[in-house]
Image (tube, rainbow, N blue to C red; front, side, top):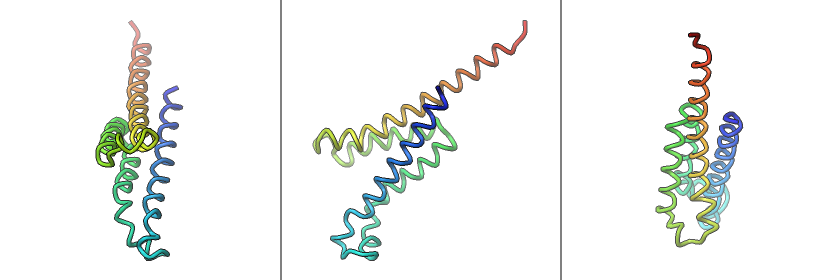
Length: 126
């Protein structure tokens, strides 16, 4: 169960972050002149999502710290993009997805820690 929770959260987080990053990179390129140079000029819009991609890497290394940071980024996105006033669908997709996935990662960390402690207690002989 822990492994399923962990890999599901990691996979969805990687897909979510990658898609949002690509959308942010390409969405304003038309107003910047289009083509490759439009994408290059629009690249600062994608920098916050590049940070989130870095946090996804952190999740693979340090699950607890990464999960906490993902939740913090989700809460920051809600306030930074003013998602509560933008509409409930945008709030669900951009705000609650990282918060829920970060919670899944933290839960997986503590379930894994609990199962290891339980196995260690079973191995002790009295």
